[in-house]
Length: 394
Image (tube, rainbow, N blue to C red):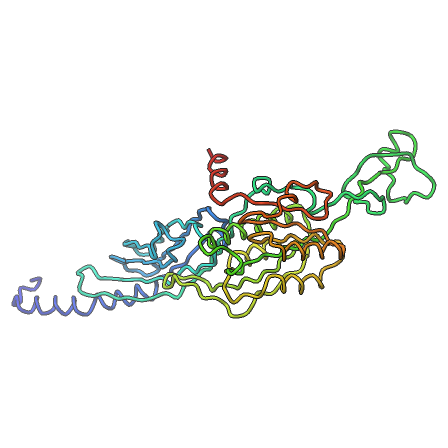
C-alpha cells in the first residue's frame, strides 16, 4: 500500500509478520520475565492471617500484552478454602507489578506454597506459551495457644519457678530487699549505690527460688480416646501442650516434650491426604529457649492406632529426667494405670500434674493446693474455649 504495489503482496507480508514476530516477542518476554514470592514470615499462629506478595517484573523492551498468573496453595489455608488463586495482567516494558492474596491459619500444620503457572499470549490471540515456575515456600501454622489461666491452670506453681524455704536456692534475678552488711557476706552482693545513700554497707537479699525442669508427656494414641470424640479431644490436648510450652518459654524456663504421636508430611495444593511418618518422633528433653521447636513439632503431629503405649513411653522418658522435674501428663482420662504411674513419679522425687481432656474420674485430686505433689486438672471443652476467645475479642 505504501509503494502502490499489488494488494496481494501486502497481505502476504502482513501474514508473514503475524506469523513470525509474535512468537519472537513472546520468547523474548518469557526470557526477561522475573517473578518472586514474598511471604511476611514462615510461620503464623492458629487463626492468624498473612499477606503473600508476588512480584512480577517485565525486564524486556517489549510490552507483555497479557499474562495469567496462577498460584497453587493448599486449600486448608488458601483464600476461601480454594487450592489456587489467579490474576490476568498486562505489563509495559520495564514495569513491575505486585500481586497480593491472604492466607488464613485455619488448621495447624506445615504447608507448601507453589508452584506458579504462567500463561503468556500475543495481542492477536494466535499464540500462547505456558510454563511452570518451580518456586516454593513453606508456611507453618502453629497450634492454638491460649493463656493457661483460661484453660483453668495456674500460671505459677507447680510449673516453672518454685519458691524454696532454704536460702541456698537464691535467685540473683529476684531481689527481695536490703539488709546491713555482716562479716562473711560475699562482696558481689553489696549494693554500693544504697551503701552510699545510707552511709553504711548494705547487702542485697534475693528471693529463694528453685528452677525445675518441666517435661510434657502427650498421649496421642487413638485407642486411648473415645472414637466419637477423638479429633476434638486430640486437638484440645495439642492446644494444652502448646499453651504450656508457650507460657514456660515466655518465663524462660526449661521445657521438653515427649509424645507417641507421629509426624505428618507437608501439605500441598495437590494433596489433602495426610502422609504419616513411619518413625516415631524424637523426644525433646527439657532445655531453655526451644519453645519454637516444640511448637513446630506440635504443628505437624498426629496420632494413630499403631502408636507406642503411653505408659511404656512415659516409663522410658522417666529414666532420663533429673530429680525434681515437674512432669505434665496430658491424657484423655485419668485411668487407674495413669494414677499408679504418677504415684510412682512422686515416690521417685518428681512432681506430677495430670491434665485430662475428656473427663476426670478421681475428682478428689481436683482443686488441690499448689504445694501438693500430685495435681489433677480437667480442661474445658473445645467449644467453651472458643466462646471465651469470642468474648475476649468482642
